[in-house]
Structures are given as C-alpha cells and as structure tokens.
Image (cartoon, rainbow, N blue to C red; front, top):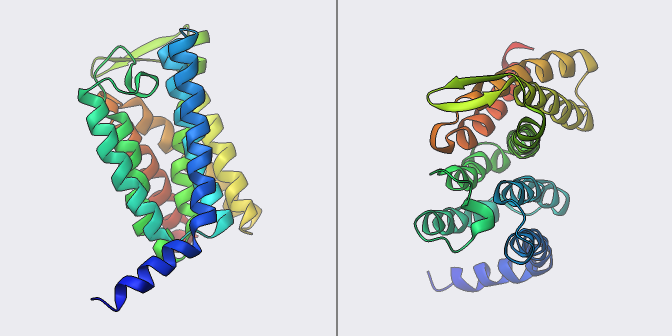
Length: 234
C-alpha cells in the first residue's frame, strides 16, 4: 500500500494543469451565476441554467485534455455531496433556488460519475459526452425557451411543461448528438437515425422530471440508447 501512494501522488501531480483548468472553468461559471444572483438579483432559474449548461461542457474539456475517468468519478462524488448539502442548506442559491424542491443538481453530478464508469473508462468518451451535453444544453435551453415563450402547456405528475420547451429539448438533443457522432466519424445515415431516436427519447424522458429525476434519466438514457443503437442494431 505504501508503494502505491507515491504513484497516486505522481498521477495527481501530472494532472495538475488540466485539473486546474477544469476547476478554474467551473469557478468562473459558478462565480458568474452567484454574482448575477446575489449582486444583481437575476432570476434564480436563469442563473441555475447558466451553471447547468456551463458545467456540462466540462466533459468536452476533459475529453480534449484526456483526463482519466477516475478523476471525473471522484469529482462526481464530491459534487454530489455538495449538491446534497446545498439541497438542505441554501449555500448556493444560483444552483438550487428554483422555487421548488428538487434533487436535480445531485442527479446531474451522479450521472457524470455513472457514465464515466460505464463509457469513459471503457474507451467510449463520446457516449458520456452525448449523455451529459444532451442534458446540459437540451434541458437547459428547453427550460429557458419554455419559460419565455411557452404558450401550450401540459402537465405530468404535477410538473408543468410546455410543448415549446419540449420541442426545444428535442431539437437541441438532435443537434448535440449529431455533432458528436459526426466528430467521431460515424456514417451520416447512422448519425441521422441515432440522433433522431435519441432526441425523441430525450424529449420523452425530460417530460418526467419529478424531483429533478430527469437529470439522471436523460443523460443515462441518451448515452445508453446511442451506444446500443450503434453497437447493437446498426
């Protein structure tokens, strides 16, 4: 065990620059949201979506810098603990103050850890990226568009949604999935079939958002569906 400690420390030291970049990026995102919320009184739902969308882009930074999956899993654990604390104690209003009880931030952090283990650790980072970015950008933009322009509403399990928001979720998910699959070299026909299927599924999963559970079901469902469509059926 003692002989393993220096190796672990050396691994951490070798990653100090990419990890520092990720921490700096997240610090800027959270600092911006907190500043808007505390100093300018910006609507908490808007600042929460800044964090929601911005933090999802961490997977692209991690992919670009080839950060090992165990780092993401460790960060996911820490973020999950902080999210649970913030759920009971309003220490980060820009993240949890949405006028309703939600474990969405906790589920969001948890999904990163799960997908890192399922896909990143097995050499398929593109599916982690699909799952998290569909959740980050799709759900984030759906909430903002639905809140601003939603005129045709529906309700599931006591949670109100709008068709404008849901269609935004579908459109953004389609775009995100297509870009990532094209980036890794999948054939255009495969990209079209998989992206449309994932987009429809993501829209359906996002509609069931009681207690923020969609922050878990959407990324996991999108990533797993994309993986099995490509490696199983197509």
